[in-house]
Amino acid sequence: MQWITLLFNVEDYMLPCLTKHFLGFDCPGCGLQRSVAFLLQGDFIAAFKMYPAIYPMLLLFLFIGLKHFVSIRFENTITYGLLLATFFAIFTNFILKFI
Image (cartoon, rainbow, N blue to C red; front, side):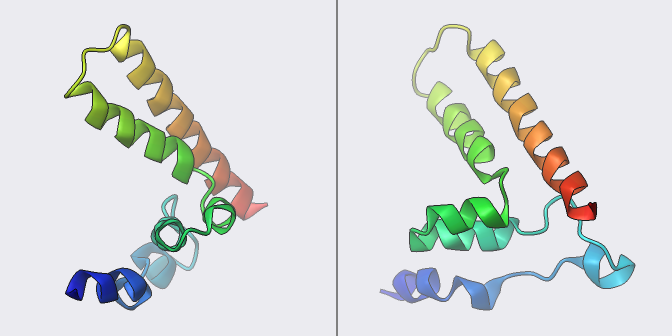
């Protein structure tokens, strides 16, 4: 039962962004923890608004996990495609924070 209370109080365990604290600007990962918290609460739109790269990243991790159990044709191509999509989503989000 303890994991249920941990799940609903996940905001209490979030780490501060050291880049933002020491340098004064957001890092490429700022918003990821809060986005995961929104996903765990079932608020998928707020998760996307907080960190748009969450869904390509989630697809990448799910695919990497899946390919260890199932043989998938063109798995390297799909993995690289998902890696690029995740990278560009993170990079685009990072650049848009400065505009």
